[in-house]
Image (cartoon, rainbow, N blue to C red):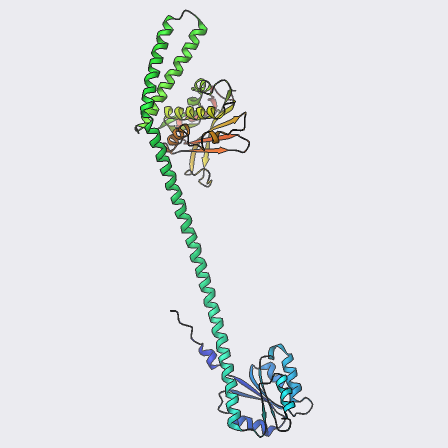
Length: 430
């Protein structure tokens, strides 16, 4: 248990003053003799004016006042002392040889006197009474010093508790962030497990696509020379081959094969699959592509990228049964790590942005359950695998934006002189 602080030696050694007011020098001398060994300093005053001067200059614990004095008597002096806010708590003892009737005693007590002593004075009685008031004043001063010291200790303890509470709040916040990070990792792992479980379905679907490709190849040989029919067959064959390639990538992803990222021009990769995206979206959804003239090169696997974008487009199509519009763009961007909505390490990235605007009030995020659908899971897993991020923002006006961040590949020195001459076939295409 914590001990109370000890009294300061300086407080113990400070003198205690007693003011004696009497117009007779002999009585002042007798007070000095009687109170010599009381452990206090005696201050003498022969009039009320002199007594006030002594009070203003010294800290007085007790005042002995003679009642019968010329000009201003003891009662009037006591009334003046009590009117001053500084002297309202000073102990007063009246001393009188003539005015010691009951009415006069009552008047003295009414003025705040603690005692009324008649003359002749019994020295031992006076010494005992004065000693009581002196000790009371000393204890009062010690208690005041103790209270001040305790207040300082309480203030220090309060500050310490406040510091500890702030540290505890910081630790709780850190633990909360760690728990959220673990939950997010577990969620991604669950999504990856879900993707891996579709490997068998993908394998069967790939076999169906192979049969479709074989039938289309045989049909091309038997169809007469009809440009429109041959064009449709060619588009169907290209779409089937692209689907077969994507299913192979999905199958590889579900089996957790190692795929090494390579520098991929995002504009070229996405422009090459424009026809596939238009067929996947259908006639009720308009597709617009916006790619910068400067190549945006990312470190990623091209097939994995196209698989992710195709799945995002399919999710957008399912979210807009009444039609709408999908805008696809890609550009280089930088991250400094200060945006909590995009927790990426600082560095250069390529941001692929898909904006879905449905005709009705349904939002893309509602249909996809906040990005938990299989299509978004594939894109999210692909982005995390290559050091990127998938972010979904569904606005109140039913416009949903999906940002796919991928790490930017360093530009080869030999290609820097050609940046101003490169354009994409899909630049500003509608």
